Length: 236
Ligand SMILES: [Cu+2]
Image (cartoon, rainbow, N blue to C red; front, side, top):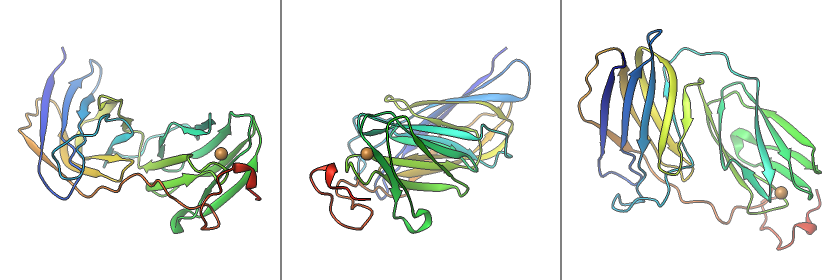
C-alpha cells in the first residue's frame, strides 16, 4: 500500500531566482521511511522566464540526523571540464579530483573560507581534499579557465541532484520535521519547512528565493590575474 501526497509550491515574485517545487511522498512498505520525488523549476532574474534546463541544482533536507556515508566522493577532470559541474558532498566527505585527460590539470580556490592549491598533476593522477563545513565552494583549474566546479556541502545523505527537467528523488527519508532546501550553481537558493509523516496533507506552500548570481565567466587565476590565452603559460 503506497500512500502519496502532493506538495505544490508556487513561485512568489521576490528578488530573483524563484524555485517552485512539487513533491510527492510515498511510503515504503517496510518502515516509516518515505521517498521524496519532486521537480524544481528555476526562473531567471525577474521571475518571468525560466532557465532552459533545471539541472545543476541540489535539493536536500536539513534536520535529519546524520547518517553514515562513503568516505570518498569523486569528481573527474575530463575534456577540460569538471564532471559533474555541481558536486554534492556530505559534510566530512573527502573529494577526490581525478585527472582523466592527457593534459595536466590543477585544482585551486582563492575563496577565503576554502583557499587552497593542489598543484598540477598528470593523467590518471588525483588529488584529495576533505570538506567539513556545509556551504558552497567555487573551484577552478589554474591551467584551463573554462573549468569550473561548484561543491555544495550538505549536512547529511538526504540530498539529490536535479536532472535537466528539474526532477529529483530522495529515498528512505524518516518521518519528521525538516527544512527542504534547494541550491543552484548560479547562486539561487530556496527553502521551505516540510513535515514528512503518514497521512499528512499539505496544502499549497510557497518557496521564496534569496538571490541569484550569474555564472562567473571572468574569474581570475590563482594569482588574482587574468588567464592567458594558452594554458601552456601556466607556471605553477
Ligand atoms: Cu585544467
